[in-house]
Length: 215
Image 1 (cartoon, rainbow, N blue to C red):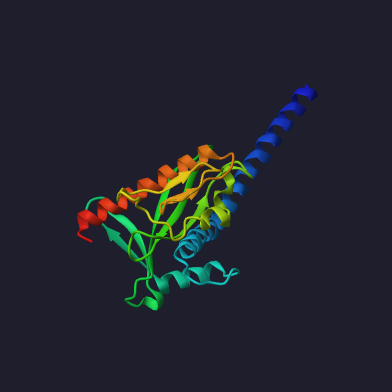
Image 2: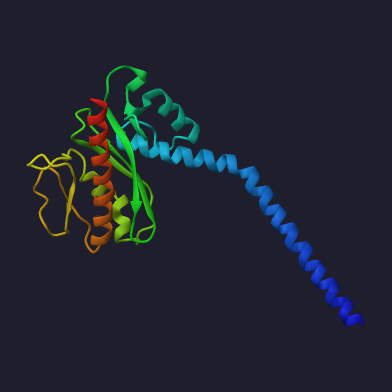
């Protein structure tokens, strides 16, 4: 009987402890959620600003990044049905357009890849490229976030010599001689292929939306 009573006490203690831990974790999550959401927003904004080449200090706080974004970047809608969100860089809220950015995303090798593609005001030249979410293999596909890979897109055209829309990420070791060609990452062909697909999808969408909007 004593052993049975001891087992009951043990089970009761385990249940109470489990419920207490669950309630504590839930409470912590609720308390920290606003800060987490703000940090997530700030990280996306950091990537928009980086793609558009908007100046900001490397150690800028989330509040500072949001303030710079609200001052220098104007959100616009392109297209009537299911509009595409554009991020237009207009310093100090002026009328001079320095560049536009669009969000892109797609399936990577292991998980979704998300980022921003920025174009010059001509809508044909790459201004910058950033990735704010990816889980590709470190040292291989994960190198898409490196400055060397992202920087290779800058000043590239999003049309080929025949006027077809799209960026061509060529295999590593192959010369990227075309105006719309970028060298791929060694041993990361599959990731590069997926990045090429998602970037070209947003380029195509942007072209169609601009045409339908008469821009």
